[in-house]
Length: 351
Image (cartoon, rainbow, N blue to C red; front, side, top):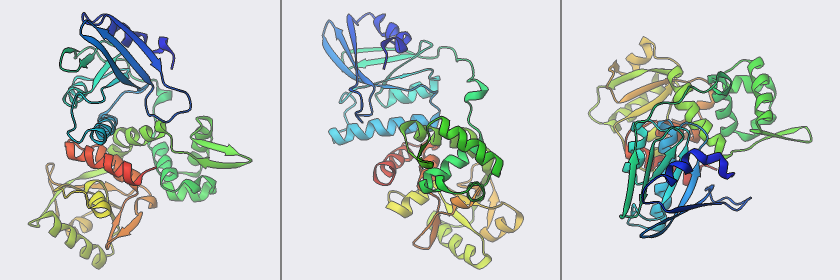
């Protein structure tokens, strides 16, 4: 990482009254530490070291949840007491809106963006915070990801060997046109999301790709496939899930759990009243057979099954969505428990 690539954030830190000197030490090349370097800061009270994470894209809720979950998971592994001052981390990013900035502050994570928002906490001795600075311009159209691209990325992430499939088979599996598959596959090769060796293509899960899956799902794909929120007539969520299984069999309705209920089915992590699930349609017959009533605050979220890949695997009589879709759905949640479960799922089941 080049020092001048972060000059805006570094200049902000240099300008803080209690900072006397700072030094950026890049990470060792070809290591998988997950950090871009170490920032050494000298104050009147002593020296501090912060592990640096540099993000080149804006952090929406999903990316924020993923990053906070990862950092807190590492803190917990090193210190069961989960101390805020243990293993300090500093995040550089182009821009943080106030709500995201506050979430980082609550999680004990320092940050600096390119427009002047900053939070630097050095132990219990020093703290400097400025949030609420202006928004940056929108990303160029060429940098925006499309729903079709997200669908194909989830197909490759779910079944990496499908990179070798024919265009026709990929189009059927991902739920997009053959021409779009051909166009996107060439783009993915150019962006090195697909690696070609001797005429064969191999899909690789990289840190940047994981971010693309999370942000692409929350920002682009999920709004497109959201069918609505509903309430059920059962006393408990468990009662609803039991009846859902029976109704699906009786009326031959395909569905797949995602988010918290799917994570619970796979790892028995936690029970939640919220039930997001994929269905082919939210027509009158489906709602009647599942006994669902439209309710903007209801616990049941119906998502359109955009491709066959969403019906991934049967677990104890219930079909669940692919792991990456479950993970991405969890990251759209607003509860801390969603973030914690997403991180545990990532650590235990995802590459």
